[in-house]
Amino acid sequence: MSEKEDSIPPHRGLKKGLYVLPTLFTAANVAMGFFAVLYSIRGFDLVKTAPEDASVYFNRAAIAIGLAILFDTFDGRIARATRTATEIGVQFDSLADVLTFGIAPTALIFSWAFAPTFHENSGAYGIGVFLLFAFLMCGAFRLARFNLQATRPRVLMEGAVKIDKNYFVGLPIPPAGGLLAAIVHFHPMPLSTLGESAAKYYGFALMALVGVLALLMVSTIRYVSAKTGSKGRKGFLLVLFLAGIAMAIWLYSQYTLLILAGAYVAHGLVLFVVRPFLVRPKLAEE
Image (cartoon, rainbow, N blue to C red; front, side):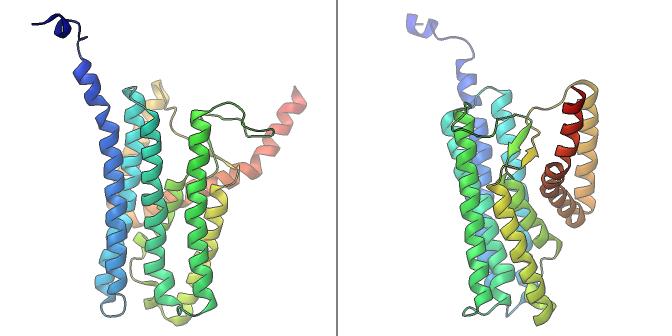
């Protein structure tokens, strides 16, 4: 054995292998976004001729986006747990999120709702496409802002929001895209099958939701982050809670996922309205 081989520290190969784990989960995230886009295209092809078959593909696309949220959660946690987080990993994760939670949900909503419901030359169709593009752009901007804050935690400009690891600044793009996917999973049949008047009504409501989600992503409204984790009794209770959620998803996925996604999106707005009333009494007491 050479002196060079003797100088190699033990477990160095294992350490290098650990760096691959977060990347594998990010790659799985990309794969789910890729398949979600393909399923959306395939479903759109069958909307008029075989709507029931189209619903199968739309549901698969929605499930793929849901699985991507799971992979996206694990890659960050594994990187932090193994201390293998890298700058290139952060950038790769963001690029994956643009595809999976930006492009894939917009392709799904376009194929499932807007394109089958509104005529291509109508104003409503154009508004729907514009809002989907705005959703994608706001999501990409949200990711760019998050990366900048993560790599440069100092104040970037006067009046910038102070970074708190317990909160996200603006709605993260995974729950925004996840809510759209949960809606499709709840009712995978193409929106046009509800009838012309009902489909247009729900189509306009969906446009409003897409616009609100886009604005929330670029807002400064804070959303609770689970990155810090819990220890002791709180950690045990959290495990029990997650186990119950997993069981509910297994048994009633359509209702559970829609409620969870909607509750997370709404809780930031609720905290934004309630927080001033909670902070002022504390300041008065001090």
